[in-house]
Amino acid sequence: MAGLKNRALVWVLVLIVGSIAISDKSVSGVGDTLQVTLPLTGLTCAIATGQGVRYTGRYIAVTVMMQSSKHGLGETEINARPNGGYHGMPSGHTTAAAFGAAGMAQHCLAGNPPAQVMAGMAAGLVGGSRIEVGAHDVWQVMAGAILGWVGQVAAFVAFDAWFRRVWFGAGRGLARGFRALRNGLSRLG
Image (cartoon, rainbow, N blue to C red; front, side, top):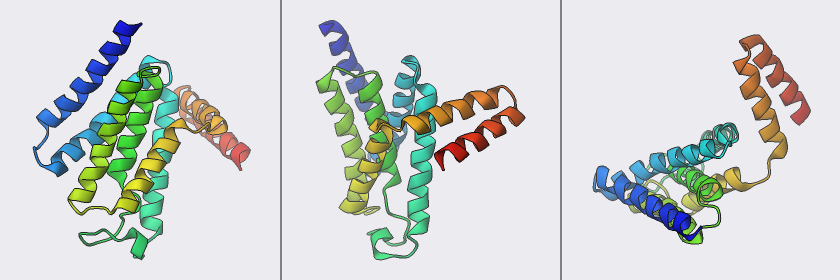
């Protein structure tokens, strides 16, 4: 068991160092690379443990919530980016990274606190990169981290069941998939 934990920690370190090595060496480049690498690795872990559909559904839901917030807040002070413009609340890079890191921690790194900490630190690096380049302020980054983490770890049992029905219903035919979506939405509402 200790050997498995050590291998998981090594693989997380390889993932992080490898992502940094292949990225543009700027702070922004590292953040850009990890904000893609972490959710994809989280998806791989979820698939390996039979949770790929759940992970995908939650990722879609978190992305919709994040984009809805960015566009719904419009030109308000909370949505203003430090370097100019709007659509800053919450940080999308940080949301994706936190979601992926939490997924890795839940699925592949369960029971391995050092590896879980490393995944969390990688997500923190993404958030820090967004502050450093002036794309977001600390509150926008914190909101992204919370949204990504909650979207992955909270017990959304009804949503997960609904999305699973939609996912597999769509695989049996488009018409049957749309019916499952309609039924799932009416149950949630």
